[in-house]
Length: 224
Image 1 (cartoon, rainbow, N blue to C red):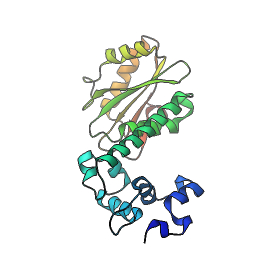
Image 2: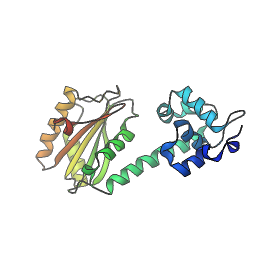
Image 3: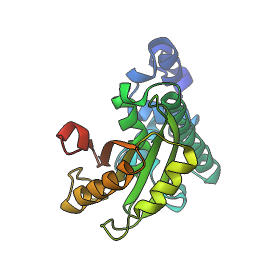
């Protein structure tokens, strides 16, 4: 049976318009993105099959182009559409942060950093540069690979701070292991950077570690 033959209240698109996107299942959201199914399958049936094959929505969203295009009914055009949707989401979060006081929106900061860093399969060290009103000036990913005291250079961060005339920063990096717990190296790096930035009167407001299911805050743990 085609989706158009379903009762209107059960069709994903109509359901979204009537009740909001938050009430839809992963399969229903994906079905709206797919728009059509394939021979013998509605868009919802195809969506359910894809979610099973990929192991859930997140693995599908974070798959490579090659992996994505192996999915039944998917191709490079759909992959391009998906990447555009994901990037629009990241830019929306960034614009929302730039519109107000970052420190008044800890949940939004976590969502933004999760969207930016969680999908990386290697450690990435990033900096959020803030003005004197704690508004976001810029976000940059600066260091890549296994992080230790020898691979994060304070002078490079200071150069970027001066470039943006930043008054404060928030550091962030991901743990590809998925466990958002600070290592001894993480704590040493943070203290080293704090000491360096104190010399130019720039505050380190937080250092956040992005894991698989959570984002850990040094400030909330009393580590900064």
